[in-house]
Image (cartoon, rainbow, N blue to C red):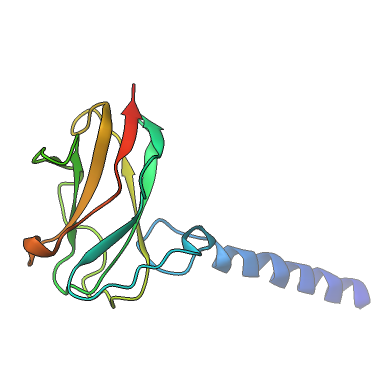
Length: 145
């Protein structure tokens, strides 16, 4: 009887880990976002990449940002420098439709050669679809081959 109880508890314990696992959605509250202040009023605030990071082509970056702009999501644009118009990293809108201005959201992006190239001053710009003038830039970072 005790053995079956131990097995039951072990199964319950193992199952609970399945529900705690992280996903790739742009949701809040992961350890990776701890320490970032994503609070913003009237726009988008990109807190990571913060600036000075070094990445390679093909690498995945987790962009961390906050916003309070309501709409149908956001564009993620890779720019080789501040003067570049940039290229969209996705074919569709990404991120939350109803951000709260306090929460840090995550979006994984890949430095793909279809829209990015090596740069010493790369930027990722997060642009609300309905209010493009309220966009926010990451810090500048380096992308090598």
